[in-house]
Length: 157
Image (tube, rainbow, N blue to C red; front, side, top):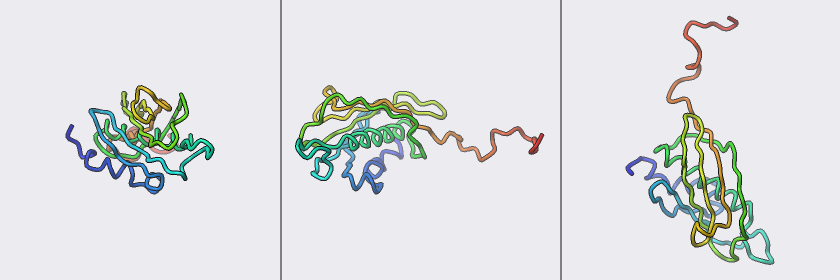
């Protein structure tokens, strides 16, 4: 796959202030599946008694990798917004272990991208959580504002 997005995936994975602060790191792209990692850190733990990473971190990780999968599917960077994100937690993450997230955009329409993602330690076959999400695309297709209006129609008519 040759695309300008491939050159900037590492920056998109970790370059924003919040992803940098959380320690997100680009791992790989295999076909249409993008993978990122968040290293275990004590300040990211949700339950100090168990040492398990916070559920909010898992949700953020799945949402972010989902966005990366959309950009991979588009082959370019453009503004997107999360419309819907459902996360099913299947088990607690293992204590003191890095968490990996993988996502694939399985359907693109003109205005919405649909993504499935998984968070896990070793294999997506044993997920901590799975996500189903939808992202709104900047669907103007390069047209300017008002392109959807009929030519010659004036205000109030």
